[in-house]
Amino acid sequence: GSGFFSIMTTDGVQYTRNGNFSIGEDGLLVTSDGSKVMGKYGFIRLDKNVQVSITDKGEVFQGNESKGDLRVVDFEKPYRMHRCGESRMRPLLPDSKEVPSPGFEIKTGYLEASNVDMIRNMVEMISSYRVFEADQKALQAQDETLEKAVNQVGRVS
Image 1 (cartoon, rainbow, N blue to C red):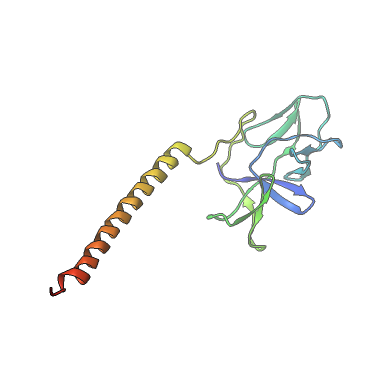
Image 2: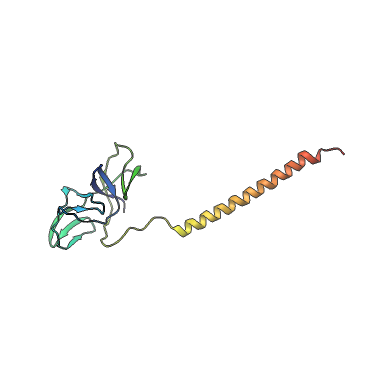
């Protein structure tokens, strides 16, 4: 579904769809680059060496104890986001308001696939290029015909 995980970076709050999280040295849930993952009510602190599970709605558990909810937010569509690198984004306009994401499902152990079908896009690109080449040859033939009409048909011998 739509929505972004909120993370605290050295540059302030940013957003990501990359859910590759781990437990940092200080016991906080962090991203692969060490940014702190934000919960609805602050950072999520976990005990090391205890199994972590996350529900499809973002509630973080260790054993039977709830440690908090992931802060998943969304923005007005179409998204106007600036890519900051490391799978992070921030709103392009500073006055963009974040809203709770209405419909999302978190799946643990999965990676989100790309929304691009490479093979279909390559076939479409090759097809478009061939149409472009055919149109270019038609224009060259028309140009040659007009050149003959102007330079040879009106000539008196």
